[in-house]
Image 1: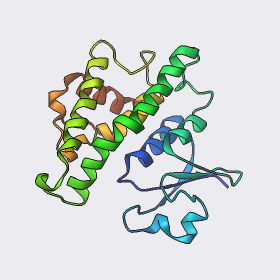
Image 2: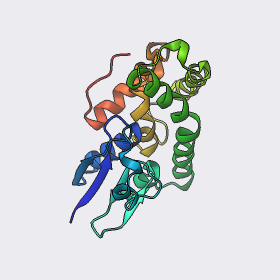
Image 3: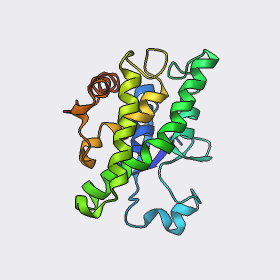
Amino acid sequence: MGMVIYGDSNSGNCLKVKYLSDVLGQPYRWIKTNALNGETQKAPFLAINPMGQVPVVTMPDGRHLAQSNAIMLHLADGSRLIPTDPFERTQMIAWLFWEQNNHEPWIAVRRKLKSMLKKRDDEIDPALLINGNRALGIMNEHLGTRGYFVAERLTLADIALIAYTREAGEGGYKLADFPAVSAWIGRVDGDLGLPMVKP
């Protein structure tokens, strides 16, 4: 039995795991799992992941692993995508925490409300746009003097941050206002073999 990814292609958290598996050449079977229609709260899925969230992977030995960044750390263990230098590795992990706490809650949520649930701007908490733009600004400043987030090469930090950032326009964020982020998206898209995103 090979690895199985239960995922929703509309979810950046799921796409992180897909992008990583593809770039590592890790074979997998993708099982489409709709996170919006309650599928992840039904008994068959909860037997796999009691957290009731995607992504979750079933490893070839039958064990299950949830939470996108934890999955990435496991799959990429020993690969070039995790720096060997202890300080750089810890910097990478710090960006993984930041992505889940200071990036995804704003950018991903506003994208979901605006693009998937078709909410008007006046129906969406304005704090999402403010805080999302702040996150993009932090990224833009960091990338102003470097090509990647850590170690001047592709790491898990970039894969964690690319998934929702490259779709930020769907949430009403203007990527053209963040030129260093836009240039980074182009680099990482090329590294991952993804279609280029227009800023």
